[in-house]
Length: 150
Image (tube, rainbow, N blue to C red; front, side, top):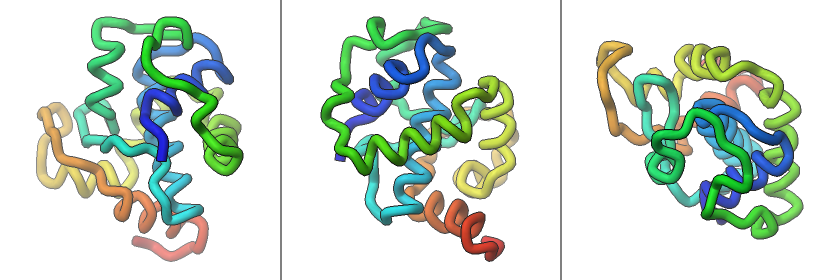
């Protein structure tokens, strides 16, 4: 298992400069889909159901105060730590989600069960540090593959 910083570095090296909002969502979707396909975590850190969608607090702390970021501005992380299978998972996510706008990724994550379930009855603008579990990610995204509603 690699760190969120390793995955973020890989994403930034592949995609180039992007908003920190988008980076968070691409890391989240990398975790979610990798777990769905392999039943193994990709990223050791957790994602929480923040008001603007899934966020990894450790990554947020590293880019706090920045709107845009590129690989050189992320001091932590080593993309070479990802093995071929992990890179394949991230590459598929980048192919599907990489060209989307940050706000579109936020809107999408807000419509999906893992974020909704973690938020519970909280108003959309309320703060939250509730973890979005990989099990919930796997159940929801797996249902998209196998056509069974969660």
